[in-house]
Image (cartoon, rainbow, N blue to C red; front, side, top):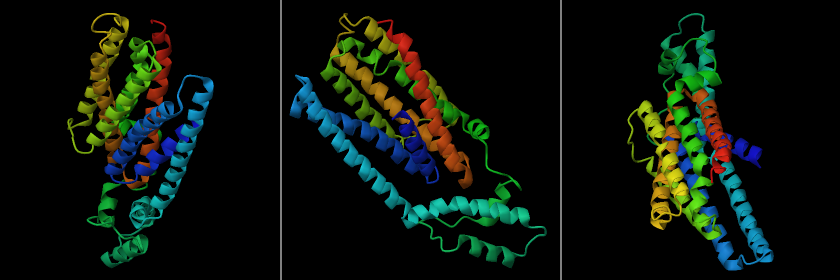
Length: 317
């Protein structure tokens, strides 16, 4: 299950990285919305079929899994339909155009006349139709912006170029999985209902942060975004203190749990989405797909390291 999830997630981010950044925002927002949806479906199944005994739980789980399978099938159909749209074909073909033009420039032994360049542009762009307000790439500008004979960027080069965004994506999820859901649910004594409620609150706020990232740019530079991500470490302290003093007036206050979880969720969604949106913009079309793969990998690195760190931290409680 984990391997399948990693492959699909990396592929989706690789695909979205070839489109304008609003598409990466849509993917991130969709992930958050998916988290909300599965919790809503799970709560509905629990209240519809009950949870008093194993038979009721099994019945609710079967319905829950059946619904998720239908949703996954619809996602497959939607992805196939997307790739058939003229809009999508334009951006997906831009990478091939980029690579073809590099070959055209590298193989040219003598300067070409303007009419030859025009003919080459026509041949390479073919039937490509630009979306509204979008022009076919200017080949001379592409040539001047690239280095002669330059191949695709390596993973190391991509990480070096988008180092701040890579740190943002990985560290956001490292902090999240260090404390959530483990330490975050300690004050509830792992009550089934409260666990689902807090997870749903997190997912709702996370989704809000992901949608907001498209319209609100709080951090103008990548280093500022990385610094804000580092400051998110404060949630490690807040969750730890709430869990440690869970029997105190503050630690047992439901409002404290909810407010802390709301800020935690919004910051997770907003910062991770901004990082994922900004990274592909550093690269030419032929490198954007790999940049999407690398950023998805950094996402998974943060999740894995956070989950591993959560194990020893859980023994404190």
